[in-house]
Length: 115
Length: 118
Image (cartoon, rainbow over all chains, first blue to last red; front, side):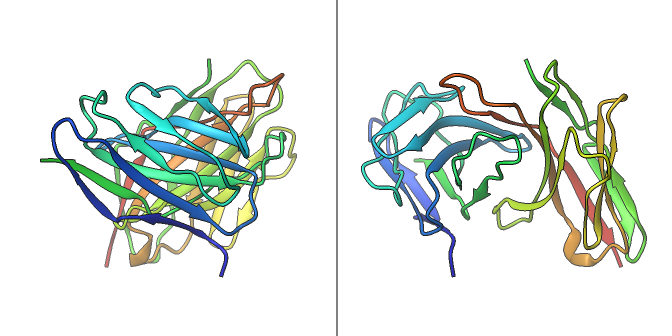
């Protein structure tokens, strides 16, 4: 079955540590996205990538970094510069068309906790 | 700037009854897309239904329908015959048209928690 996988499900970060969240999709989608969700809140866009080897900052990119070396993969690194990283992180993908009907499909998410 | 407002932090409904979740939006674009997602306690966001700004008929997908009132800028989700499994957080979202090098951003509301009682 086609879908989006995220790992790990739970991740613990120590002070000053960089951690990387994995996102893989086998939907053959061109575009991929990372969102952050805080308790009781909506989703905020961290980074997005419309095509391999290209990515753009979203609304809250500070303290995060990404890479897009393969179409299927879009890992997110939470750096030590992100002072409040505790949140639920969701990865999404879409076909990459420019129309407003473009639907994003989401992975199961990773919950990041700071020790 | 786009804005999505969901004014109901929480809603309760009896099993087998219908429920309406409110969503209003603000945009200066003529072309836009409206989406509803369901987020169960497991966390995954599940796409439910889509309505385009130029669509003349309200969208329907099984027990889900979208009450689209363009002049009022509202896109309410109607769930008919509620089931216990419908208990979840529901998000309204709007996609703006892409322009230049900018992709069409998807903006989310704050969500509504729906609880279905047996």
